[in-house]
Length: 398
Image 1: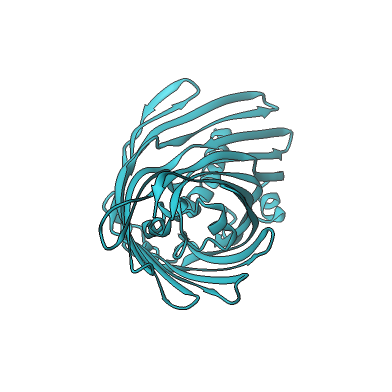
Image 2: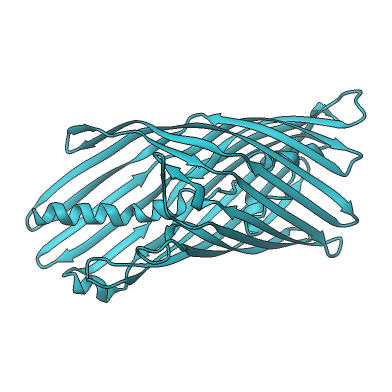
């Protein structure tokens, strides 16, 4: 019986990371990610998933392929907290976990209209659930290890159209629907003294759709401004089937009703070689409903900033703050805080470009692990992303 309580507790802890990071909109383009995740003024095919106006500036067709990976990370309480709970050498680590994150194509469309038109399509996550956790500890003579792989995310296929007026103001719209969008997780555990092992799997499908609109403009020399808006939308975890040690269970579907997300950003060319960018994003947690029930977390904000130096190789750096869908203190409604640092490089060689980004993110909050008092729970993660770009005039251009 104690073994089952321990297993359930560990599963709950390992799901905390998902609870606080799953519903942060992700940046899939490595260039934008390297600059703190600023997406308001991002241009090109990679902008489709976060600001569809960004394809309006293209002079020729562009294709992008992006991937990301978690490298390493950890989460948990201080070691003495686990010792008070009767365990030793407790570790909860996040391991190497690569995934294809974005495929995008966009092209200008030749017309006789007094304004430019572009069209495109992209596939990628608005929310990213994927990751890999390993938990291990010793309790007396008992040794325990568990490995869990989380799958998928809210992956959308997004046809997009944009228009540009007078060469300095672009608007765009996209409509995305869930496509190739699995969720769930799969794991296994092993215990020694006494010896036992097992496995479990949750299969589910992530469904839903969303509209996204955006605008970008260069209103004065060297200053770009961007705005993106996602009206309220629903997401559902469907067809949920859980298996524990070859025993099947049907789980209820879960419906999430998200309020509107928005971002306002600007970038400024300090010199022909240096650009700085800043951005505000909302975190509308107070109006989020899960199965028609409010979650009780206050609204928050995300602030992002970045800088780029364009030499033979572009050098980029940035940082961000965030407010998570998790309370800063157990029983309170203030959201927990997260922050991170980013960096990266990029270059173009003829029609081919490569951008690489790395990021560090962390978060912390306080809750009772079972000791009768609140303790600080900390999360940290290091990851990387790469985007390959190819440009061609095969489909025409402006």
